[in-house]
Structures are given as C-alpha cells and as structure tokens.
Length: 335
Image (cartoon, rainbow, N blue to C red; front, side, top):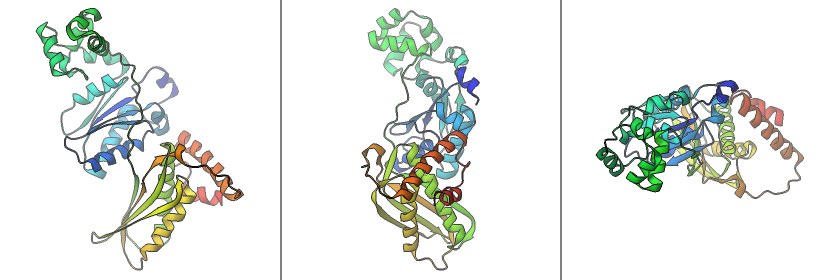
C-alpha cells in the first residue's frame, strides 16, 4: 500500500475471532503470529484479538485484506486453527465484519467509503456491542436494521437505551468509533520455528538455521518492546522424537549477541552425534517489558558498537522488510 493510499483513509483495524473453546496455549500462539505482523496487538480473551495495521501495511508492502489472508494461512498451516477476520476503519466495523463470517473462517474487509452502505442492511443485533436486551428494545420500536438505527436522532436512541448506551449505539451505527487499539496482554513467551525439507545432521546448515532463529526472535522482541529472561531450544528428530532444554540468561535481553551465545550453549548441551533433525524451535521465556531491564554502563567498545549496529539494522528492516539484511550479514559486519 502506498503512502497516498494510506492518506485516503484505508481500513487499518483487524478483528480476529478464534474458534470457540480454543485452548489457552493455542490462543497464545495465535497472538504470537499476530505480533509477528504488527507490534500493536490487543488481546481480547478468551478467543478474540485486535490488531492495528497502520505501520504493518507499509512494513509488509501489502493491503489489509491480503495481510488478513496471510495471517489466516499461517495459523491454519502452523496451528491447525482457522480464523474469522474482519477489517475496517474502526474497532466496531472490524468486529462487526468478523461476526458476519461463517465458520470455519474467512476474511471480510470493509473500506471506509463502504461503511454506511455495508452496515445499513445488517440486522441491528449484528452491530458489535449491541446486546440481546438492547436489540429487543430496538425491535419493540420497529428498529430492525443498523441503517434505521443510524437514521434516528441520537436523543431518541438515548431515550430507548439510556443516555450513555444510546449515544454509543447511535455513533457506532454511523460508523463512528474513536477507540484506539491498545497493546494489552502480550503472551508470556515468543516462539520462532524452522523446519528442514529433509533430515539434517548437526553442522553448518543447522547452525545457520539457529542463527536465523536468533535474529528473528531478537527482532520480534525488540519490536514488541520486550526482553527474555530465558530461552528454550526444541529439537525435533526423524521418527517423531524431540529434545527440549531451557536456560536462563544472565540478564534479561533482546539483543542478538546475548541470545546467540546462550542458544549455541543449548545446542552444544544436546550432544548431537548422528541425530537427524527435522525442525528447530526457539522460544523466549518469561518475557518482561524492555523498560524494566536495568541499563548498565559497559566498557566493552565492541559490544556497544554491535548494539548501535543492531538498532540501525532494525530501522532498515522496519523500512524495507525483514529479509533485506540476512543474519549472516548482521554478525559478519558486527564482528
């Protein structure tokens, strides 16, 4: 999406509905997938979430509907979870859109200039935020569609539903909802994964994949303003067996250098000889907000130079995409 398109007021709020009775761990994994697309994710437990797309659209170089399709494909292929995704210019429109999608899943995007025409014919109880009692009160007065609700003076709706609820319902029926998406309840862990197209022994390919996971995890944590207190490395082998080990970092960190050092120690602890690997997973554990990490004065000029380079590389990736600079380039130039 171009800057001109953003200036015309494209839909930038995504509302995601997961299947009912989704296990909490799987719900957390859905949130992780969303956080990998945008740093502004608001969890709505137990099975819904919001995502602000303004920065994500330029970062990923696509439009809102396509980004929703990408999220749906990722959760379906990686987690076996299909999503109902609504996109709109406000929380109300996006949530109403996701509610109009039949199970198991799909994506419905409503552009700002389509809001009035799209909302108008829908049943009044389809408007996000209208409860059964409010819908019944409106039905009693012959108000059966959102378009009719929008056409009635706000004062009249307030007499039917109450002062605060009436104004809110009237505004939302007209597509007005100034509430922002507020980052909230980010998962306590962040995971990145890599699978191999064929069975692979520990060696250059595996170490390169580990380095790639370190860079992905570090960038994800820094974008979300978090730091990890520990790391878990999971190795999956041919035949379905797996190995998993967790170690704590000396200090909470999201810096590639710190993560890489501990990851290589975890890999060495596995003591692989002829084990045939099929996949790797790296998880940042016990996450905290980055502003809670103690900043210490360092006398290590090399480390300070690497941190400066890391921040510059993050800005480049945010502007041009995550694959613009590869992990091998990062560590070669920082060394």
